Structure formats: C-alpha cells, structure tokens
Image (cartoon, rainbow, N blue to C red; front, side):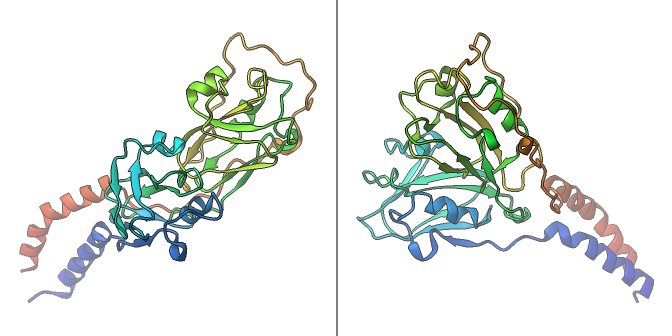
Length: 312
C-alpha cells in the first residue's frame, strides 16, 4: 500500500515534471484574415497584419487565393526586399497554399505575378519557439527620427548614429522621417549602398514627407537621403531591429567612415532635450529554455524508476 507521505512525493514529482512537457497548441494563421492573399489597398497591410500575430514553431500559414490569379513563393530576405521573383525557395501556384512553420527565425513570402509584390503583396514573419511567450506583450513604438531635429543634413556627421544608439527598435515599431517634400527624401538601401552613399538602386524610395516605414523584420536596416552630397554629410541612418520582445539593448552607434567631411550647411544646431528618450520597456515573463527542459527531463528519466520502486 502506498502511504500518504509517498503519495505526496509522487504527486510532487509529477507537478515538477509537468512544465517540461507542456506545449502551446499549434495555430493555423489565415494570412490577411478576411482579406485573404491578394494585392492590398494599403502597401503595409500584411506588415500590419503580421504585427498582430504570434507565430510559433508548429503553427501553419494558410494563403487563401484563387488559382491562376495569385501565387505565393517563399524567398530570401534579399529577394523579399527587392521583390525579386527569379529564384524562389519554393513556389505554390494552387490555392489555398499551406506552409508549416518548422523552425524559428524570419521567413519571407511574396506573390510572383508582375507588380504584385511591389504593390504590397508580400509578407515577412518572425517565428518563435513553440513555448515562447507572446510576441506582442509590448506596445509598438513610433520613432520620430532625429526627434526635434527631424530628417535633414545634420551639423554633426554622427548625429543620426548617436540618436539611434539611444533607441530600442523592435518588430512592429514604426520609423517616421519628418522632412519637407522636395527638399529631402528617404531611401531604404543595402549595407553596401549605405556605406558608399550610393543612391542609384534603392530598395524603396519615399519622396513625400513625412514618410512612415514599418519595421517588420529583425536585423540591420539602412536609410539614406538620395539628394546630392546629403548622405556623405551625415544624412544616413542604420538601425538594428530585434524581435518584439527582444533584449533591451540599444542600437550600437555607427561612426562615420574616416575622412567623411564635416558638414557646413546650416541645420538644426543642437541636440534637443526631447532626444533623451526612454530606451527601455517593461520586462516580460519568460519560460524555461528548451535546454533547461531537456535537463529536467533527463533527471526525471534517471530517477523515475527509483521513485516507482520506492513507492511499490
């Protein structure tokens, strides 16, 4: 007969083991919800949709579309940024199309029909571990680039690098570039174009101010002004975007390359007090890592036979 004391010990073992084997139920994400998968009215529609979702390993993405009128391709980040349809990782032409999210990280999808991707039929998502906490416990933030200095040629060539170093950029946030239409613009560019201040082939170009750019993927993002000599004089911005609940680590300052000339054109002369922005957000609860879970499971496997023998 099992004594009450031994029963209590047995129940305690089961209680401690339970978190190891808990798993969030897989979810089927219907891309775009009622809008389905098509050219959206708003070029940022699918970015905004993804910002409201939490994608985990084991979930599925379902793209609802009419066969022959749309398709969906999984592509690299470079192909996603440039809407390059020439060499997709995979291509599905029959709707509905379902993708299983079987690994963590960022995944990219576009429609390969002419002009569909450039008009907004593209989706980037960040996939978390199966038991990761919700991806959107922190409210998205709108970053006013340069704060009161706005987006213009700065007095200090490192001004925007220093500004970025005080910020935390997360998936779901927005960059707002305030400038006068016709006097400035903002281009999304590659790292090579950023380093060389090469405006010839931007990923995207915004000529009307203010310009809002939605941060929908993790990693480094690069921006310049394409007007002559303005990038070389410091009107350029590099940021690092972390996951929606990523670590509270500001973007490292990226000093200008040696020999970059100090600007002489008039611009906003001081760094405003409003730039002392709050660069932290409340922390979020965490769950045991997979490594910890495996350790607990190993201990249980080793000791469970002894516990059962003792109980008997």
